[in-house]
Amino acid sequence: MAEAASRQRWAHTSAVLALLANAHRDPKKTRPFQPADFNPHLRRKEPVAAKVGIAVLKQVFVDRPHQGA
Image 1 (cartoon, one colour):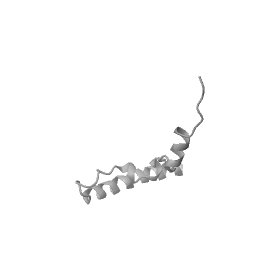
Image 2 (cartoon, one colour):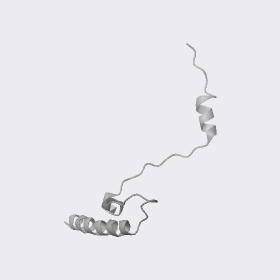
Image 3 (cartoon, one colour):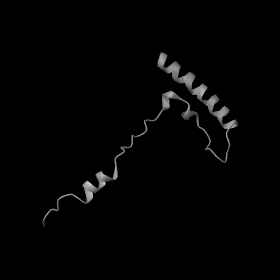
Image 4 (tube, helix red, strand yellow):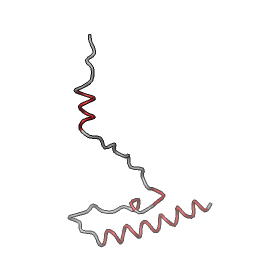
């Protein structure tokens, strides 16, 4: 029950925060904010991009052993 109350409170708070942020943003520089941008219950897990050097690509595509037919 406490979880539901917290979600309801954050739904209201995030709507107010989005309204304030949109009132003070520069439309030429930023996109409009959505309440979901401020709601911690709706945070999306962004995929973590693996950062590797070009040497790995060389190993995979150039230095791999050729498979005979």
